[in-house]
Structures are given as C-alpha cells and as structure tokens.
Image (cartoon, rainbow, N blue to C red; front, side, top):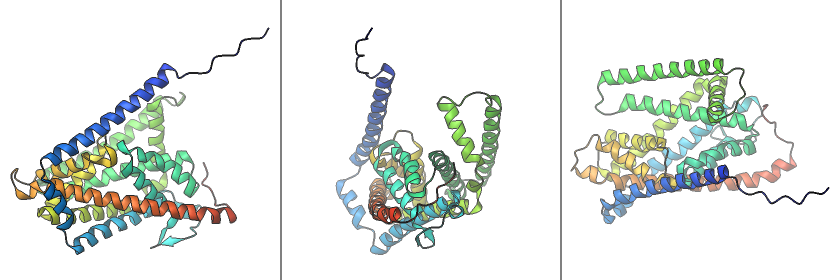
Length: 346
C-alpha cells in the first residue's frame, strides 16, 4: 500500500516564535540606540557637532589614530598568546613582530562588531578563527569568552585605579570585591559541574557553563603576556580617546578619560543600536557628567566630542577590516598552492 506524499514541512510555532523574538529584540536595540542618539543630539546644536571634527589640531588626530591602530596590534598579540599559535605552526608573515594571520582576524572581527547591532559581530570570531587560523570552533568560542572576561577585568582595574576623585577606601573595596567575585566564580562553576557530572550537556545554561569551564581551564589563557597585552591595549585606547575628547570639549584630561571609559563600558548593555550609536555617546556623557557641573561649557560639548570619537573609531575599524579582508582574499590562492597549514587539535 502506497502512502500519499507528505505535505511540505512548515515552520513550527517554536521556530516562528524564535524568529519573532529575534526581530523584536533587534527592533528594541535599534530603537534604544537611535532614540538615545536623537535625544542627545536634540540637545546639541548642529554647528557644535560640525565643529567637533574641525576643532582638534592635526597632532591630536595623529595621537588618536595612532593609539587606535597600535591597539589593534596589541589585540592581535594577545590573540596569538592565548591561542599559543607559535606552538602549533609558524607564521608566514609578521608585522611589528605580530603574526599577520592573527592581525587579520582581529581587524575583520572588530569591523563586524562595529557594524552589526547588539554586538552580533562577536559571532564572526569563531568562523574567522577557523578560516584564518585553523582553529576548532569550540576552542574559538572559549577563547572569545575568555578575552571578554579579560576585557571586563582590566577595564574594572583601570577604573578603580584612575577614576577621578574616588576615595581610597572605595578603590580598596572595589579590588576586594573583584577578588571575591573571581573566587566565587571558580567555586560556583566547580560546584555546578560536580552536581551535573553525570548529566548530558543540554540547554543554554549547560552550554554556557561548559564554555566558561573551557575558558577558565585553558592554561594559555592565564599567560602573563596575555594580561599584559590586554592592559596595554585598553590603556592606550582609553588614553587616545581621552585626548580627542579633551581637545573637543576642553574638559580636563582625566575627566575625558572617565568619559572614554564610560563609552567602553556602555558596550555591556545588552541592547545595542546600529554600530553602537546612542549607547556609546550616552556612556561618554555619563562618564564626563560625573565630574563636571551640569551647566558647564565642557559638558555641553560632551555629546559632540563623543560623536567625533565614535565616528573616528568606526571609520578606522571599517577601513582596517576591509583591508584585512582584501589581504585574506589575496592570500587564499597562495595558501591553496602551498602545503596546508597545521590545524589545532580538537
């Protein structure tokens, strides 16, 4: 007995709900980012925004751009340390002592982060690391998670050390809280895995805990050079951003540094607008507003200064990412003609 052909598969309610939820989240993110930007710009004269790009002298632009470009190199240096790339295969080319394959991954990944909303560009890293470095996807995800943990730790350390006017006892309490939080994270993760050792790894929580465990237990992740490169990267990027913010707003350098830190910390907000517009400017303004009178001339220039810095960062990221993509494309034929590169073990 023959059975009639089955009807074509249709989207299940679960799939439709997931798609609808994703679109709703994206719409909220774009609405939040653009709404913040419009609200901030509505309080900033257009002439002031235009002057923000012409007020800094050429030396300020050179310092800002130079600091940003060197920070890319430092990020690539950290990547080759945490992945122990030298222990797996030698680099075909180097620039300033840094592997160009690691630099290409950093530049293309950074461009994706800046262009896609809600930091969706983070998802490009595993694919880029697999294509350019021969890295297994699970290893790439653990590496990305660890680098973001390092970023948050270093930004918190810099904030506690350099935040203007913070009492000494609060700085000490902050470091003590960080240390206790680190110990608690290790204890909770060990306890969770001890309780679920015999259970299959299913569900979002289990997947996240497995990735966290891989990130924490990988020996190369804790290499002192990785921490040093992370510290140097953020120190340089924040200092370069503070130079431009100070030149535009005429605020003291440390106040501008607090604004640059606020802009970077704004990236932690789950809902991000297109290219981070709105949330970044709000973070910069909040960091500077914490140290300036409400009616001060410097604070009135904060939004336009933040916009100039944001556009500078965005253009650098996109241009560097395009250059890295072209170089990666040009390198592919030579890679196919030569011997295949060694891949990392799973």
